[in-house]
Length: 311
Image (cartoon, rainbow, N blue to C red; front, side):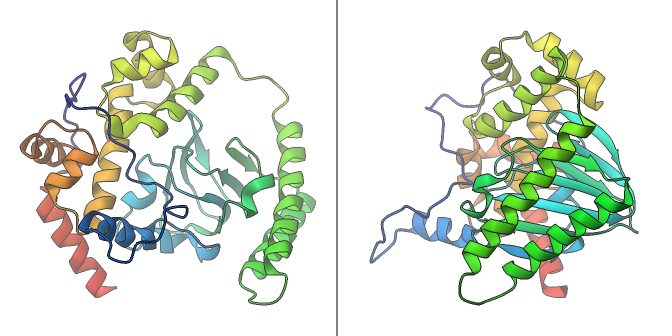
């Protein structure tokens, strides 16, 4: 059971830290990297930098939290859910999930996906150059028409096949199929969403973008609301009505997702993680983590290590 600890309006007094999930591709090579560099390099296997095709269940290999808790990812993801049910939170909207649903999550877009045990789906991860012509905004479409189901399945299969093909011209072929998939998504989005977003929907979309960009800066929800241009009270009321959770809970979910990911995927200490996420002290971070997750950071790390050994 998840418990939420209230976050202060500001959890640090030092300048904001950079987000821990950053692309190090442009970082100059070093002959003898520092300990900090080694920790960043160790993060890379979980910060996908290559295109991939995987069964949906592989994204939750060490816990449902990998998908079910609000977070964003460092590369674009295209989901094709063909069977089962669940709940999707994307672009400030919460909706039910069923078979034959297409979900496109751009790089850095906040989302959460909860599924039933019987769900079946596949996910494609795209490199930045492959996603260049994909939509800039998140997309979630239920494909009812059988002809359109076959059409998208063909695009998805072609894209997946090229990603798994190690042959000459692979990048060009992947980009070409990504462009065709993008055209299909654009046409379906226009046909299914004829109305413009309401003011409430625009605020919620802006909230998701702002939290994704600034969650690791140690700011409370008041600072987030200021960036959006609304009062914290109005923002929390709107978030509760739309998603069933407060805006403070939404921000806390993103912060503690990152904490879990850093504990699971790196050798960073709890003290280092607390600094990266803008907490005023390691002790406060430990108390807040336990209240939110239900375990201490050390217990969570130990449990994840045990699951990895079994897997």
